[in-house]
Structure formats: C-alpha cells, structure tokens
Length: 307
Image 1 (cartoon, helix red, strand yellow):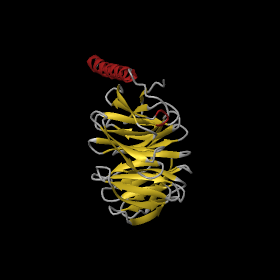
Image 2 (image 1 turned 30 degrees about the horizontal axis):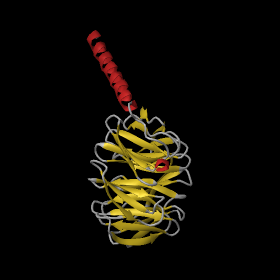
Image 3 (image 1 turned 90 degrees about the horizontal axis):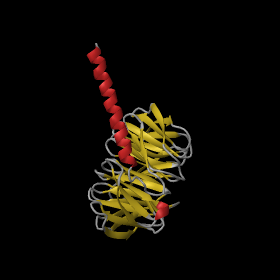
Image 4 (image 1 turned 30 degrees about the vertical axis):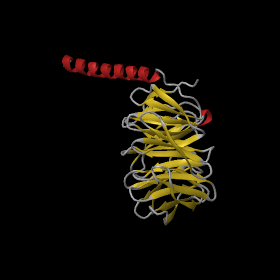
C-alpha cells in the first residue's frame, strides 16, 4: 500500500515539475506586441499577426520563444500552405507571401479592398475582402489571380475538402462556393456570423451578433443545431475532438462535437484568432496578450508579455 501511494505521489510531483518547467520555458522571450488578429501553426511554429505594429511574429510552439519578427503592413488573417505563410494585409488591399522556413518575402499580390481572411485549399489561396458587397479572390500559388466573385460581406472561410464556405456578416448567411467560384448554396446562420470551422462532418459558425454557435451539415447546409456559448462569439476552431469558441468578452468556450459545454476559460482581452499545435490552443487577442491553453485540460500555460 505504501509503495502504491509513493508511486502516485511521485507521478503527481513529476507532473507538477513538468508544468512548472513548461511555464518557465514559455515565459522566456515570449514578447510580441499588441493588437493580434490572425494566428496560424506551420507544424513547428506559431505565427501571430500584430496589426498595430505592422509585423508578423514567429514563435517556437514548443516553448513560445521568439524565432523572428517580419515587417508586414496591416496583417490580419493568415494561412499556411505547407511551405509558405500567406497574410491578408488589411490596410494595403493585398496579401503577402513569406517563406515559412526563414521568413523571406516571396511576393505581395492584390487581393481586393481590406482583405481579412486567407484560406488554403490544398492547391489555391482564397482571400475574403471588402464589405457589402465583398469579394472572394482565388489566387494561384504564384499569386496570379484565377478569378474573383462578389460575396455579401465575407468574413470567415472554411474548406470541407471540396468546397469553400464563407460567412456573410451582414446577411446572417453562409455562402458555399465550388472550385470555379459558382455558388453551391446559401444557408441561414445566426446573427452576424463571423468565424467558421470544419470538424470533418459539420460546419460550426460563430454568431457574433448573438450568443450561439450554429452547426450546419457539410452535406447540404441544413441546420443541425444552435448551441449557447455566451455573448458575442467571434472565432471558432475544431481540434478534431472539440470545438473551441472565442468570445469578445475574453472567454474561451470548449464544446463537444455534439455541442455540449465542456468548460470555459480565460482567453484574455478581446480574443479573435485561435490555432491548435497538436497539444495547446493559442489565442490571439486584439487588445492584449497571446495566451496558450492546454487543449485537453484547458489549464493556462503562458501568455505573451506586452512590451
């Protein structure tokens, strides 16, 4: 019995030591600036768009240490294509392409007025820009425009493996486009939809003007359910097991795939972007620090120190 208790004690002590070491590692050099919008994971590093500072910061996901910072005008949404980081330059009506390995500038390409979201579908880059009407622009990997189609006030985008879904903030709908830009369907969402995520079978839409997330069938756009998550949900992300929702009041909500509430966590001040590195959830805050949260437990790991 004593041996069993000793083993349990050592196991718990070891876990606590690992947690302390991890927190101290993340705290070292984890300083990136203010007004963070986009955040994306490249398989080894976390990239954060610092809108007010006109920079994009690259952090090592393992410990949060600063790898480098690159000058990019008005960065907002971002996407990773397997080799490069694509960044929507909201204030410059363009997208910037950086090589992920070393941050080398590979190109800057026109992408409509005030681009917000960027998406990679495995072969092309999609950019959502403008307002009522807005524009969805499809770019080849060399930045050459393939086509551009008008879409009502586009905000967030998600790819289901065949089509791209776009939230229309001012019409409370989601537009679904095929590879050629043709409209497959327009589906009813909640109030002022913004973020959208695909969990492998369903689309989850953050209804920013309300208090719910809407779950749509990826087959036909039928509404499967609406689930309460609290005031002003903004960003939404699926880690493959759970759905994470960022509320603009600073709360992160964790839901099961069935829409049941698991827990809520402190997301910092005005959280927007969310990324998953396979272990932790990274939350970008537009008015504060980037926070790191353990995905399986929701425990706080670290936060960036503002300069």
